[in-house]
Length: 252
Image (cartoon, rainbow, N blue to C red; front, side):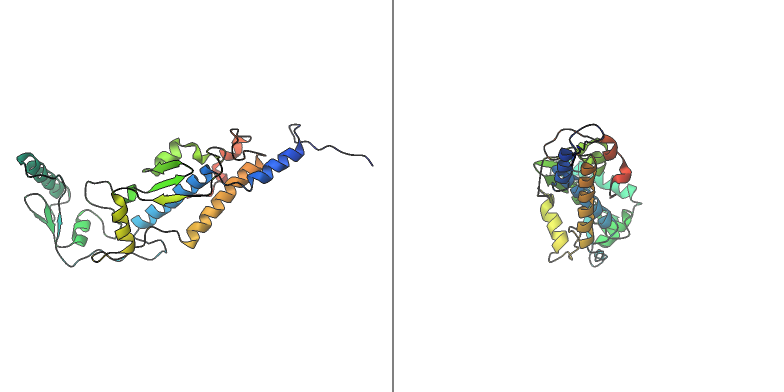
């Protein structure tokens, strides 16, 4: 009985190519998890801005019970310069929001927190603050394998190589999304509720979100397998034309 030797279209070892493809279907990489984490963050932000929690339930409305005082400039101190800066910030905000509410020396008094949000053009609950400090929803950080993505999702898409299934390809099995620093307590209070704030479970992963992540990772693995390599630790991108085709991607 004769024998036959099978090679790839480029003349390579077919057996080795198959082994590489199978390996690509088993290894989850840093890039895979960063990609999925950024997708989760994008979904969390979009749902929250639309007033929907992680389970698709509308948020409890903002309070209409008691007056709310907004201080656009939160500088600390009693010096004339600080007082003047606060007064200026208050006057500017009052003018920009249609002179709704009542001006105070350093702030604006509204009938309620809901009225304050409405004066800023927000009809529903979006958990996006009115103060000058960093906004809570801008502080979500994605971490995997020592790499981190924060702040703008746009920066991730335009400048980061993790969109490429063959980059950031060290094996990794842990993904973290979280708030760090000053925003952590605020996020926890909103998510779990406090004595004065109703629970609004915005920061979580529903079964549908987890299923989306599983599909996205599987698709990235398949892209590497189709290319015949690109396994963890490799620095090559054997079939760049596959990874660059956005039709191959599970969309956010």
